[in-house]
Amino acid sequence: MISQAVLGEWYPVAMAALVDAAGRRTLLLGQEIRVFRDAGRIRVTADAGDLAVTERFGHVWACPGTPARALFTIPEADHPGRRLVDCGVVRVKCSPLRAVENFLDIAHFPFVHTDILGAEPHTEVNRYDVKIREEVDEVWATKVHFYQPQAAKSAEGGIVTEYMYRVPAPTASVLYKTCPAMPGEWDVIAIFVQPLTEELCDVWPWMALYDDVTPQAELIAFQQMIFLQDRSILENQIPRLLPLDPGMESPTQADLTSVAYRRWLKRRGLTYGAQMVAA
Amino acid sequence: MTRAWVANGLSRDLPAGVVMHGAWHGQDLAIWRSASGQIAAWKDRCQHRGMRLSHGFVRGETLSCIYHGWVYGTSGACGRIPAHPGLVPPSAIRAEAFACCEKDGVIWVAPAGTEGDVPDLAGLHPVRSLTVEAAGIEAPGLTGMEILQGSVMIAGQTVALGLVLQSLAAGRTAVHALCGGGGDVVAVSRWLEDLRRRLERGVAA
Image 1 (spheres, chains in turn brown, red):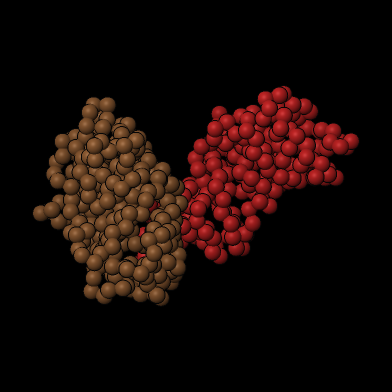
Image 2 (cartoon, rainbow over the protein chains, first blue to last red):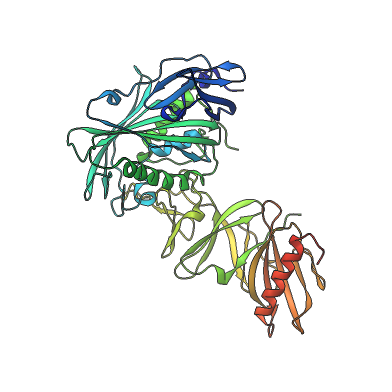
């Protein structure tokens, strides 16, 4: 039985540009759905009928129940001069919540994205700020700093990158990071995670960058490489579900964002893909 | 009755500085050998974020988790958390150790605290391991349940054989084979592959 809280959220189900009349058959929360174009309009249907649909950030979003609120916003998507990049999809055999949590984590950079997003001996994660912004009901981490050998496709040499992380929906996260090409601005990278089942998800990375130089294919290849490295971790965590029982795993100060994310999920009853009690 | 000691491969297939996946009755394990040759078997899970330790890497006398580089010593205690280089990890952070020993060239694991009674294969020498897509192994001339032993005619020569069986998931069996001194290991290896082909065809050997 899936809770109303889970059913009332928006989930990505397709890249809008790729939806044609034949459409895409896929799963959402374990239910079969179809995403297709009908007289120019995108529809998402399940056995019980049409789902609420909205198109934003290059993707199609569907809500299986009654939407609890409007889809979150990413103001940077509308900034002139930013390049919006759809990065395709990576299917991962893990809980959609584990995929989001990994996206919020920086301490793994030197070990999983070695010599790209991190490198030994630069492994220390200094204290940063985390809070649940009650007015918007989102998890935010700010003042996150980390040394990176190659922070972005456009970066030359190592730099200390500053990050901000944001969780505006249970299966979506947006990060803001120092923009190598334009000091003072932030590059925006998001992952939109489609919960196929509690232990299987499609991850759609999306970016809004200041980078007029790098070819599209290279930007996508860079992001895909990073995410495939993450997948080798995500498919080998035990259990596949995200444990919300505090006794199951041992966070440290570097994991404050993940701690806040788990607490926020629990408080809002967004437990699809979570393990409540240790098995 | 659940056997305490379960074979998990041959010593020669786990060189110094290497970690491999193992199992004890369905419980996933990380089995590794330090630079100095010390062997250890742990539950295959870093308690930080649940990552399999069998995907980790060995440096000197330590095994590190591949996810965040947490460093564990041969006792199982976590000695270092790279995200917090100045922190002494709390003693509660440790890998869950199994008993692990080597005898006659075979690696055996059992729950921590298991005493003695490691099966005896004295006089036999390791040949090779192979995985068979079959739940049970039978061969003429060999008797036993978890360890098949006996003499078999191989390439015109009578050879003493010991096949140590390890049940794997999904109806597969790992066979860790040993033979008596003077046995032609190449001929024994071919005989084993032949046995596997017959078993996988479902034909009684």
